[in-house]
Amino acid sequence: MPVLTVRALDTDTYDGLKAVASANGQSMESMARTMLRDGVRRNRRWAMAKAADLSGGPELADIETPYVRSFDLPREA
Image 1: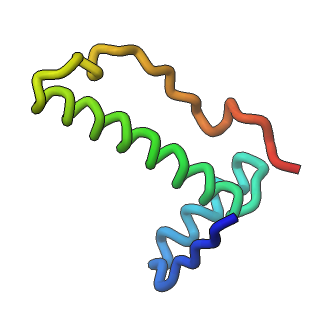
Image 2 (image 1 turned 180 degrees about the vertical axis):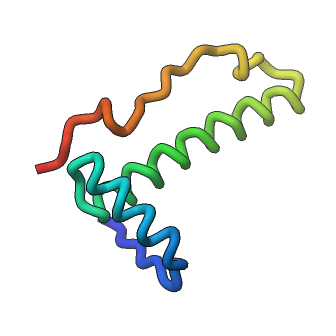
């Protein structure tokens, strides 16, 4: 599985991630994975909808895609 190292996080981001992870009963690493995954999914859907709009293709922006909130997902062991 690929590994990503994030350097030079500002203190507010680090502390915020730590607080959100703690509030959700997750490790910071698990919470970071969840946030990255959710952000990529949102941006991918936006990019697909934008591309369809520009190409005159099907209106993907009108297709309902349920967003799964991170706290609805099963917790990692």
